[in-house]
Picture 1 (tube, helix red, strand yellow):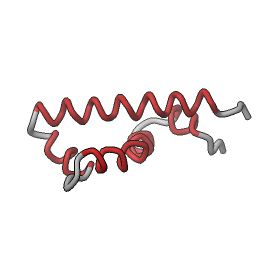
Picture 2 (cartoon, rainbow, N blue to C red):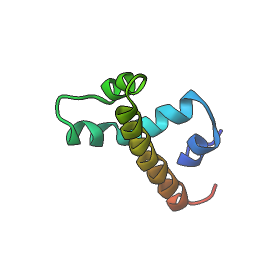
Picture 3 (cartoon, rainbow, N blue to C red):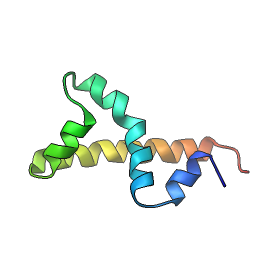
Picture 4 (cartoon, rainbow, N blue to C red):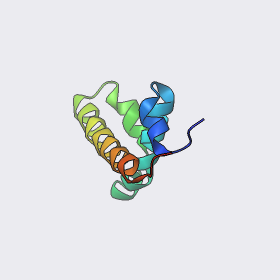
Length: 75
């Protein structure tokens, strides 16, 4: 079983999302004191502004994951 970052990119569903959220959680909470990523996810279900904000943060996570995967040596 592969354990490098590419595993998270290749797999789908909740594991992938959980991995991506782990990449941005600390940065999000540092940029928005008093808020958590869970707060944003909850609000995104009924607010188009928050949905867009979550989409933008997840795009950052996907870019970070892609950079990590490129930097990892092949196994």
